[in-house]
Length: 133
Image (cartoon, rainbow, N blue to C red; front, side):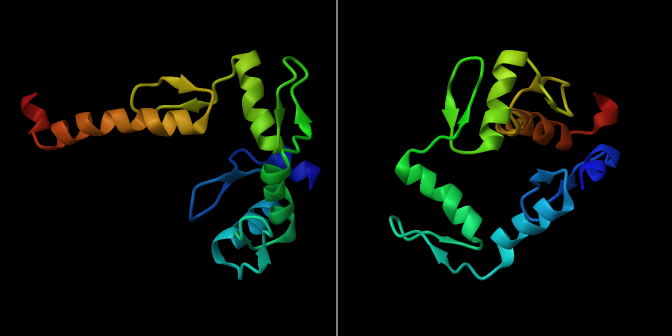
């Protein structure tokens, strides 16, 4: 499994939400969030989950448990992925690049929000004969 991560050039993507995974097992597990019978219910808010591990992670929102801590600033997180994203604040890494203007972002959500700013430009251009511009 570890070697699978290093051999993979592109991450595996969920066909429903585009979330990326390096390991096929993680993708399979994630896919259940979209398709599986959700039989694990949160006793606090009644939300349903496809797997018990997702319920355990969710429960941290109610207990305020934050087991993942940044070594640089000591900020704590409920999920390891949130810590990984946060570390980019300190490293300056910006792995998400806009395909329209080449601007780069540390968070995928910021890129997605930014890309919406180009939608108006695309609509304007698509309504004109580009050869005349």
